Image (cartoon, rainbow over all chains, first blue to last red; front, side, top):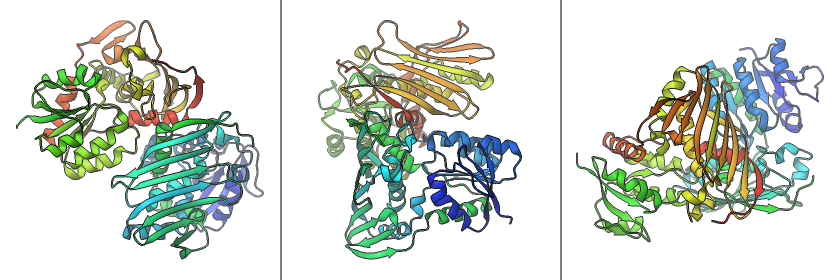
Length: 308
Length: 308
């Protein structure tokens, strides 16, 4: 089978930090074009927009959308209509319902639509899932606290409607949570702190439950200086399971169970190649649904304005 | 087949105005019990709570939940676990994701779960759907403006998290919209006006689109005095279709196409009896999903406090 000829749409921080090296390291897929208004890549065909790229006749099979979530739906719809496979960065869109027509379009055209959740490919996520399939969770605490100025410098879109604010990183936690727990969870309460000059929350607490009464408490902050926290702690009859460092490390009562090197995006592209080759799609909206439900049910608090 | 022995949970305005007369007028279902902290009904067994009712051994087959949406999930879960069929007033819950486990529980126990949307049973909705299946819509305007002080006097829950504010009536419009349009719509933008003392919006504008580029604009207001508006206008090649009075009347360029007497709740109970008899469920979350997405994507505006 010929390698998949891929175009990257959007060449910002996540594309350069993660997508480019992962594509280069993955068999069966080659980067052949970039669509970006402001950035170029030496030796790769360049277009200002996806529309220009599609109109050019440049031979591509697939696109990876690395632009902000607010415009993702329209780009994905264009690409699918042009018969291309589509890989979506997380979150897969600005709303849950906009994904329905994309799933239908991919199905109708036999193309792959892959809504990626990179944290699900963190090395200790599968060991955590396997552990919790055997040992029932009794309670869960999610602590996701990072410094937005370090990780998202100058990314104004994150504060615009659809940018999710602190849920942009926290949706990674929810993508792990929904992968490792034995039953689906739903939101039972939330408090969302909106800076007075932002359309998205800068901090939040969210409570979840499952059908068996399991309680999950999430504490989310985008202004954490000093040590950063991307932890999920699970109380079990065998001790406290800690999935730390965004899914990289698993320990039980302090004893390390799993600590493998990180390879999230290489695993994403390996999976994408496999989906394209087998004609499949993979679109799980549960993490975005939980965020939408937190916005729906959340009590809003006004907090100080945020300046980058 | 013996009549379904039904318990009403919650005996507020909607239960008295709509459910009681509809149940009395429907063959195959009898009201045998009421669970309500504050209200009683002559000649019908009374319990303070659903838990008391279920523990009493009172013989019932089904419950209709007419309490505010915030507690609906837990009541439905209790009832399904006790082997009862469940009818949910609209909205079916306080979040979208809480419905998943209820659907699974109903399926596992072979019981009926019916998430009702009373406006879908308005007499001109089906004629509107049939018209728009033949004549493509070119643009849609939803105008849903009512006086909360008239229609929801003293109902503080509507302003609490999960109460939906102006979307409590407007979700009726969305339940119609999602029934009459030829393709699913999704939210593309929203502005939500939150009174400074409320956790739910008092007014909103919401823009929607479908996969073919159809635009829908909704203008929602909960402070409308004078004439009240519950209208959906659709531009078509054959003229402007107006579905007015909450789905009761259909006209084309002012010429009446359909104006039948209203029988929304009688149709709901007829459908519930049919679902129970055939072992089916009916849970369409599209209207609530659109509201969740409007909250997720909506820009928030602060407006004057609301006092009843």
